[in-house]
Structure formats: C-alpha cells, structure tokens
Amino acid sequence: ALAAQRAEAEGVHTTLVSSKRNNNRPEFVPQVSLEEIVRAWDQLEQDEQGYERKMLDKFLAFQMADHAVSKFNAKSATVRAWLDEKVALFAAAETGSSVPEVEANLEVHTAFENRYALHATVLDDLRALSTKAGAVE
Image (cartoon, rainbow, N blue to C red; front, side, top):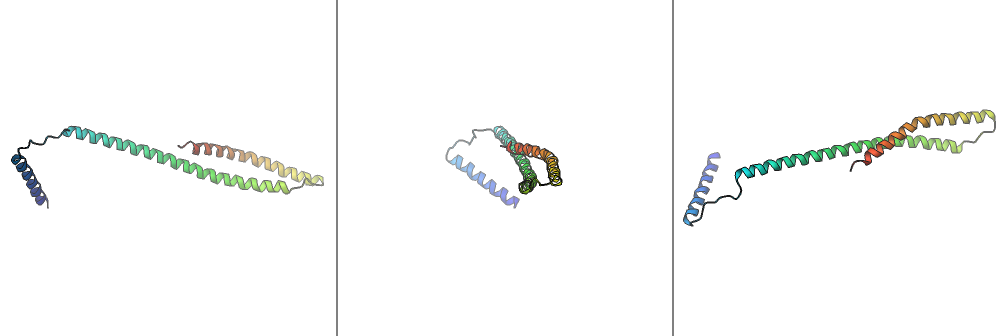
C-alpha cells in the first residue's frame, strides 16, 4: 500500500516536471516560506488553546451558577413552606379569650420569632446565592 502510494506520487511528480519543461514554465516558488507556515500554525494552535481555556472557564462559571440556583431553589422552597405554614397559623389564630390561651399564643409567637431568627441566616444565604448566580454573564 505504501509502495503504491509512493509510486503514484512519483508519477504525479514526473508528470508535473515534464509538463513544466514542455511548456517552458518557471518552477513553482510559494509566496510563503515553510517557516512562516509553521509559525502561523503554532499561533493558530495557541489561539485555539486560549479559546478552549476561556470556554472551559465560562462553562465552569455557568456550572457554579447553576449549582447556586439549585441551592437557592431548595433553600427558598424550605423557607417558603415554613412561612406559608406560619402565615396560615397566625391568620387562623385568635388572640384568645383567657389568660392561658393568650399565654399559649404568646409562646407560639415567641417560638416563631426564634425560628425566624434562624431562618434569617438562611435568607442571608439566599441573598448571597442570588447575587452569586446573577454575577455570571
């Protein structure tokens, strides 16, 4: 197979040399040297590597943003469910008609405030995640 390709290439070369000689044509001299082609090829490979690095960085940034969005959605769903439950509880609750009922409602409200303070850190995390996810261009 290799010998056949070599024979074919030599045949084409002989045909071109004969044609050039028969037609009084000058020998072909390329406008660009081999060194210039090699330099241009090396530059092209460097540019391609730079482009691939840039695209990989963008891909990783989008993955991080996607992760931040999914964390945001999970945390916000938890907080939303808790808030909806508490809103329904406080909307339905009466102030009470006796001291023990009022004290019980007050304890529920105090427990809510304590739990809300815990969720305040989650809300801060949610704000940070939304800022982080929004920072990706």
